[in-house]
Image (spheres, rainbow, N blue to C red):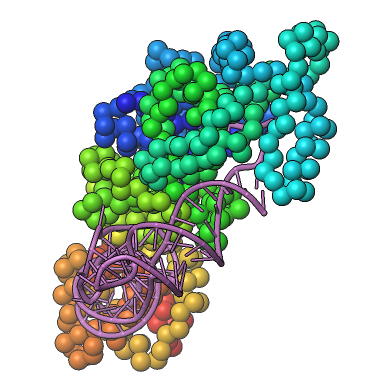
Length: 484
RNA sequence: GGCCCUAUCGUCUAGCGGUUAGGACACCAGGUUUUCAUCCUGGCAACCGGAGUUCGAUUCUCCGUGGGGCUACCA
């Protein structure tokens, strides 16, 4: 079984394309098949080398490796359509079809075609090319070519072809009336191949047996089937994936916000989370267990469970899933993932701690990170910087009755010898019993006075990390400035 | 307009003739946590409408309606 993923390098790798790539990849892995990567850069105006680079890098980052592609060619290359134009593949194939009577030269001008189309629209009929050029004699065609008239090549739709039935692994049978198709262009007047032709020529030559792509290609399929038939080639299996929708239920696009993989990477998403989330868009495993690593995904994959209706992309759930994956990371993996996202302030802050303390800091913070850049706000609480602390105080309001607790706390820490987490714990416990106050009444003011924040990780560990000097200074400062 | 696809909680979905219509995200409440988050428990919330087939339709068929895609010498 041979699969292919065929993106156009007309933009950065899009999240919708990734989903298509993913399903091809999983399907191929599941069946032990081969995945081909083909770059469809026949649109010379819009295709850019930097986009191809972006696509290749994005796929690599996500771990969606192809068995054959421009970077690791197999036996059926080249793997870029531009190179296949250059080596004359499409031209040669089109001429072959003219020979066999499946295609013909068309000399219709743009004006003529526009007129035909408008007339059809006015009449409320589907537009079908009239086939005027088909009536030309061999000599007339030769004369036109000799005269250098602009020409295209059209595929001749067999007159009594009737219904074209495609077998779709997701949707079952889909039927089209071939009479509504019209002889369509396979070679444009500039000599380049039209999409519906290039794709089929490539898929035949690359021996592709399974085509998994977006639902937006369904209406191209009957034309492509006709091309297969013109070449007497086997029509592959199709699986048209439901489209991914934005919150407004229209096709997901840039106007719905960040949609390129690069942007997701920069926003702090993990490739595993993206893969897992995307796999659930339009598909569910039979056991209903949503968390799946790559191997589980490959193992559980089943084409028949792909759903038919479009799926709205739920950004919130992706974020949630990302947080789940972050929590599951080992300490080393977490630090490695988060390091590129560390702000200058965070780096300075961390340098104030020993290697061992840094490890504790990261551990304390890991579960509150959903997106990698969250690390910076999570780290703030560990800041030893006095001015930042003072700035934070202005956002808090202390009540007079907090003063007693803080004074008692200050007295105790100044003479405290066991500055470990358990030592602090014992100290707080003693304040609780001594004052008879509830935990909230005691710990809230201490947290505020030591960190300048109303919330954060486990307090005793935090105080232990901050150290006697800083904690002492901060509490006395709060007592002097806020509660005197 | 034409062709095609599609229709279960707000969202992703399970269901494949008989179910208290299940799960996940989000949301709400309670519990744990000093607080926030995490975590645990509970709750709210859905079968688009109408015909038919059937003893029985969310499930099958048809017709509407809604949504989406395509309608190029773009891919």
